[in-house]
Image (cartoon, rainbow, N blue to C red; front, side, top):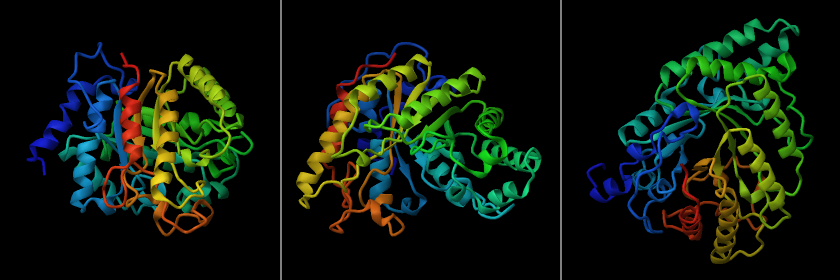
Length: 384
């Protein structure tokens, strides 16, 4: 696979161009050298690199045996995110019984193909997204007697840091805030420790993965309601005032929630300005654009709408030079979580058609969204 000279050219020596100080959000040590000109036909990673941006996609181990997909990942990406395999619920579904083979397979794939890896995630602040035995343990403890729980958290952080030392960036805490009310989500960890479980999670990962970029990850985007955005800003202010070692904000960017609905571009720009003023880098960690709100069944028109919407979002967001990385939450419709049996019915199309939320279709062919992403990257200001 690596003998393909065209793929070698597309990889474009990206490690040499993008390597910076990992723990400070991939900041480059010096201004970028003059780079080869990129065109829309270049790989997305190569185009992004000319702007000082890293580009990647989530990958599931179920698709590592598909040569067409792996060649596409290697061509288009410089980074992968582990989709489910590093989530604690799947990594240790039963106490002291780790199922690490999928995560190790992804780490090996990344290593053999010169890709960086993002770890997703250490703590997901939903009871149903954590191991059931952890939630049961927390609920059985008296408030204030949290040592058995924190000991297990320390043990898990140590395992992650020791077993996956090459991971360059970790989503340390995922979705702590309830977007419906702006409060910290009611969960076992929050019930035991209040908001300080976030402080502790970052402290643990800083100790056990000291070279990795540490990210708080959440779901906000340019939706019309500012409730979630404002709650996150206040949370970040509190965390930074307590010297919690956060390097970057991860913005999931599942754009289908707002496609065809009111959005607040002014409010989004103000939000991004505040994040930049805090000194935090930004990663678009889970970019996609579901077309469930488009009534037209014609795939050509659906693809045109999702492409235009994605480009508008990226044009605005990439105008902020602290946005340093884009990660797709699947490169193709055929591998998308949106089209798997377990995806909720209320998030599917009313006409029952498969969702088309990604840059490539289910036959690995590029769509208009791929062109839209390339064009947005080409017009983005260069990072220093």
